[in-house]
Amino acid sequence: MMAQFDYARCGPAWFLTETCAMLACRTHDRVQQLIKSLLVRRGSNGPIADE
Image (tube, rainbow, N blue to C red; front, side):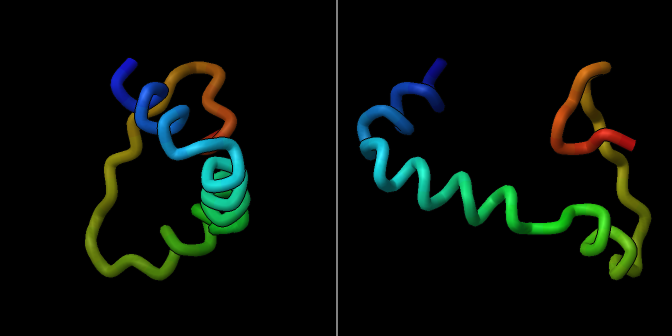
């Protein structure tokens, strides 16, 4: 709930700019470049980590 308040306080222009930047980051590509192990926790319907 705290995060939603912060997003609303920053305004829709900032939110859209940041959302586009976050979605443009290819998580799967970046994970392959890691040297150490990574644990990813997600829900059963997670749109970000779908595999």
